[in-house]
Image 1 (cartoon, rainbow, N blue to C red):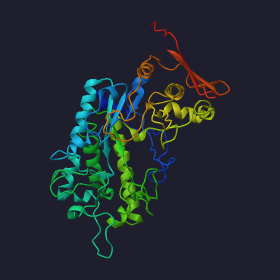
Image 2 (image 1 turned 60 degrees about the vertical axis):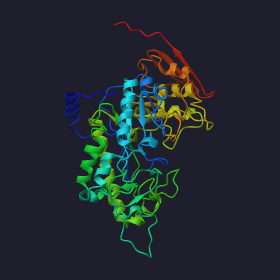
Image 3 (image 1 turned 120 degrees about the horizontal axis):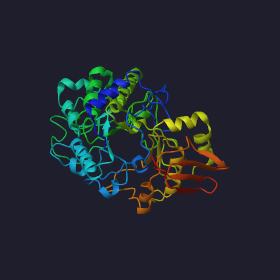
Image 4 (image 1 turned 90 degrees about the vertical axis):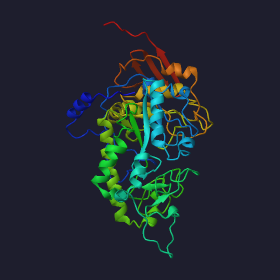
Length: 446
């Protein structure tokens, strides 16, 4: 958990008076393609180096039925909590209280494992009324300009997504809870996934950054150390691998994971989509800067050396490590960027079947702000849907490796890569896909 000290924050802000230092160039297209999933520029974190292996782990567990099991979250240095967590509970509340339950879940994790950080879900593309801050704005007519509207109705041109509740504000039913109490999403607000209109400019941006991102239930909360900022706007057809005709696949682009044809139902042309995408991208950047200034970080700024489309299913070959260790430019980038190395997946449901090899790979290439762990793999009615780590796996994570004594890894034999740490010598033989982690006695003399 990060504890914020106002003086430290003020000093940190003073130290970054110059423009933020990016570790990757901002993309020309919006959101900018990297494989099949967007990857955004990284800002350098303001918190210090985190070399401990257990402290560097991250996971995104989810339990639709209630609170997360501490036995599942305990091994991880960062726990990222999705809005679907405890969905069966918050969807049944008279006024949906997803926002409050995320805060409560963060507090529970912080109390049970005070050394861990907790990140929670936010969305600056979709306006989700199960979040209290959003619901209040949707229900207040003076803020209707924050949201996209339906185009005028036309019997000859029916809406592609039914207009529930006869609302003037566009919304789809997407992942909306199937059942809920009357008025659960606000007075006169039909439950659904609404869209922010980022052409609104500074007024919307200021509210999103200061309240949705920096407010007391987000980065302003003592138990919240970071945010997952979901979804994006594209200004060109963008197909996600799990997409089923999403709005972003339209001729002009659009909102990700929103019902196909949202631009048609809202009357948006190419210039409108471009303006909204550019506005969203500026707000995303302002959100990143707010998160970092408050001492936290965001999943969307992590870089993925295995590629961003999903977990690796094949062993990492010699070419991967030659790029990470030998190639000067890429090796420097690996050490500098906040990385996210996912545990491998064999497709058979096993929990991290290449666990030791993944740990070795991480220790070979990592820098001071890297993460190793699990990304999103769905939300189950059972806790720990990807399975709890074994005792042997947890023991390896908790070993004291100290800090690296080699600036980066080296190829010590054809296909064999090594990096020395204060507490271990780490090798990975890519010819046999075999890890060799030899612990050594640390010299702790002062």
